[in-house]
Image 1 (cartoon, rainbow, N blue to C red):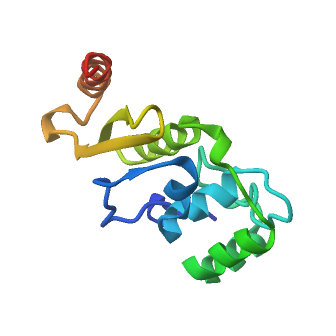
Image 2: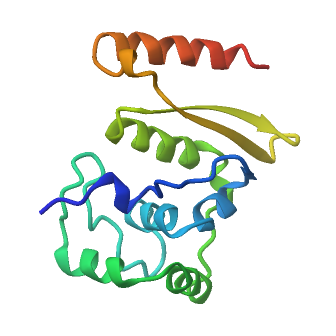
Image 3: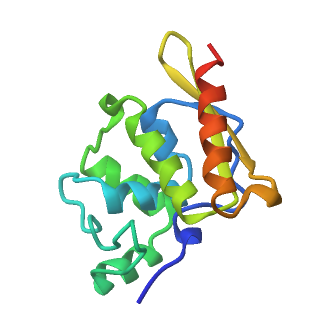
Length: 152
């Protein structure tokens, strides 16, 4: 059994706000799902229940339970267990954005660190249709990455 990228990404995602790492994953249900599947946290019943490379469900019971959790349920679970991942800087946020990019061929993003390294601004957009297939997609993404380095 497999899940889809939509389980981890809200199709109406609002990328316009800036975030620190803690707020970024607490922002909505989809991001929080990714966090609990991906991250070793104390008393985390969902860690590893989905293979994030293949989207293959590895632990069906945990996955079905996670599907039933609301955003508030996950917030409460984090509070009860005193989860804190703010020290991970922006690495985990970039990992999440790359995860989306790997599973959604139309998705791309640029980022900018702001506020004396306190926040990351995310500019997400759709890749133009003519660049969505290889080898043009790879060239397009490399060009965008080069352009991002020039944003400073």
